[in-house]
Each structure stands twice: as structure tokens, then as C-alpha cells.
Image (cartoon, rainbow, N blue to C red; front, side):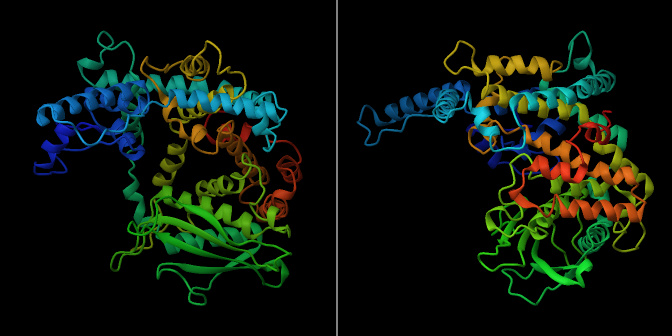
Length: 538
């Protein structure tokens, strides 16, 4: 296939390396890394190529790839034997180990055994003992509350994408040839629907989001809602790269007292800096160690300035900066003096994203955005129609996205609570059973081995905890709802709610149970209503 190459297709890879490369005509190489895979599924028009990539991605580290690898190894061994004409080879090749199914089964057995030794009925119960969610039933109830609204929306979204495919995709998408879109069709046609609906590209927005202007606007928001002034102190401390900047925080309610500081490393440096964005603590508040002024690292990977052009951000990068600043504020505005529970330390896994996701909500608040969204050359504000499209894009596909996240979270919870790793039901039987509840419009194909690559729960820290993404979304939306209730244009009301948020969510750290922290701020337990409303699912 000239349009694409998948990993392991060495013959085509060698052939392509000898070709003249043209961005428009190809050849193109597609790997199974996330960014490459997602882009391929969204933009490659050839269905056969999409199917090949889709199945390649979903059969990673399964019996399918293992058998392919073994067959390839056998063929190579035969070819080598023929070349050696019967001579003994000096080295034996290591056995191919590419099937994760047995490893996953062993992990689940050991987790169940460990939970039992510690007095828990199952691993999920053990995991939740150190989280905000009280039990599996609470997670299930919240998931089903959201599903009730998300599933009908997801089905409507898929129907709209299907209609577009039927209307514009040609004969291969006719109902007689294709009764329903296949999984490798969905992302492609959802993306076409998005383009048709909004006609807005990320690159068109960059000129309106110059980094310095965004920082100034964000710092203005922090002063407005938390009564904290952020001052640029770059040049007063040693830094590890000329791009790094340094800022200090001052409490306006305490005569401008210096209460915290942070480093900002905003630009991508592929040679010596990993990708992504994160907040890390440099110094934490600790009475025992004599540290009263916490210091944070905020790290992003935006585009650096080029010549006279400043750093221009995509809207997603703006959201990311607000997100990481939310984490930083919880670290820097803490009032806990015991190091192990100051700032984000000791905060339960499913609650730690509350301040970060809360800050993202302000990226859709018009006064906040228009405080910084100005063209870097002309000073013209972001056109109103662009801002409205940004807000509409936020809710586009929200139903399918919510159902997908609910499936992952509840599949994880079911594997670690009710699933018997020694029973007759396989992990893939369980996957299909959960899909019938949470994504009945998109059941897994027979070859689907998604669980073999579900590293979040088998090679990361999310075992019986994947639900925490949605749990934190509920809390952050509900917290922002408190500001909406008093009116986002009500300055006195916003300041009062901001003060309460600072004194509870941002100040109390990990020494107070997160449900108690939330109740102290909101006066009640979290409700999913605000999240459903923000996502257009209410």
C-alpha cells in the first residue's frame, strides 16, 4: 500500500526509503504511536488503509502480533539456515514475547490475592480505600448517571457522521454496501463533520494567543478571583535555560506579602526536554524544614519565538497552560504546614485534578479570554464568531467521548471487582459485556485486543482508578458552577466565591479528606449536573 506503511512492514519501509519524499504525494509512514495513529484514523481517506492501521493498533501485544512475530522469526531462521548451508549458527535468538494476555491474567490474579491478604474483598475495594470515591457502587452510580444523558447524544452524533458519509462518501458508503460505519470509519467521518460544522482550524487562532498576552490575562484572572498578584521576577534567580522565567506570588489581602514563587519553562526543546506538560514541586511548604514559601515548576512545550514573531499558542496550549497553573496554585497557595500533606501532597488520586480542570473552564469565559485574545500584530480582538465556534467545538462529540471514557473506567472497575481471573469468562468477554452497556453503538470487532495495550491500568497507576478522570471532571465543573451561580460578571460575588475556593480547595492540602474539602467549599457533595451542562448533555 503506497499510501501508508505500518510498523513491521519492512519491505515497504525499505522501498519507501529509496523514494523521493513529497509531503503531498507521499510515501508516508504510519506508526502505531498515539499521535500517528489518531491522525491516520481521522484523515486517511482510504478505508483499507484505515482498517489495517486500526486492527494493527488494537491487536498490539496480543496473540495476533505474537503469532505474526513467531512466523516472521521462523521464516528468518529458515532463510538464515539456507544461507549458512547447514552450518551451525553461533547465536540463538531470544524467544519472541509479544502476547500480553497471560501477563494480564497473572497481574489480575496477583492483585486479587494481594487484596485478600490485606483484608479486602477485591483489588478495587483496596484501591478505593485511599481515594475519594467511597466504594465501587458510588463509581458505578455516577457513571450510570452520566451515561443516561451521554448515550442518546452519542447515538445522535454517530447518526450525523453516518449521514455525512452516505451523502458524500460515494458508493462504498451506501447503505447496501455498508449497513453501518465500521470502527475504522467513525473517527474519519466525525472529523469531516467537525470541519463541515465549524470551518475553524487551530492554526488560524495562533495569532490571537501570544504567550505574553496570555500570561498577563491569566495572572489578571488569578488576582481577580484569588486576590493574589503575580509579578515577573525573571533575572533574580539562576535558571537552567535562557527561555525559563521566574515569577513571585504576593497576597494582596496581606499587604502584598511574598507567599510563593514558580519557574515557567514554556517552550519545546526536543534535543533535551521531554514532551508534554506538567507541574512539579521545587520546594514544598514545610514547617519542619523551615520552608514557608513554596516554589513550583510549570513546564509546557509550546512553540518558541521565531525572529520578531513571539511565541504563538494554539487554543489547546492555552488550556494546557491554565491546567498546569491550576496544579501550581494548589501547591503554592497551600496553608498546610506538614510537608507530606501540603499542596498536592497526599491529595487523593481522584481529587488532585480538581484545581487544574477548574482553571480550564475560564478559557471559555468571554471576559477572561478577551482580556488576552488580541492579534499580536494589529491588536484586534479575537473575532466573535471564532470564540463562539471555540465554545461550540468544546461540546462537539461530547456524547461519544463521554461514553468512551465511561467504558474504560467501568471496564477497569469490573476487572478489579467482580471479574474472576480463574473463571471461564475471559477479559475480552468482559470487554464486550461492558461495551454492550456503555457503547452499544460501537461494539468491539472480533479481533479487538484493546486490553493488551491498556497501559494505564496494567503498567501505570490507574488500576481501579481510571474512573478518576471523570470523577475529577464532575468536581471541577461543579466547582466552576459555584462561580456561575453568583454570575461571572458579578465582581463581588466572584471574589467571594474565589476566596472560599482558595481557603478550601487550594489551601487545605492532603491533610483533609477531599469530600470534606469539597463540602466545605460547595456545602454539599459533588453533582454531575454542571458537567453535563458544560458538555451540552443536560
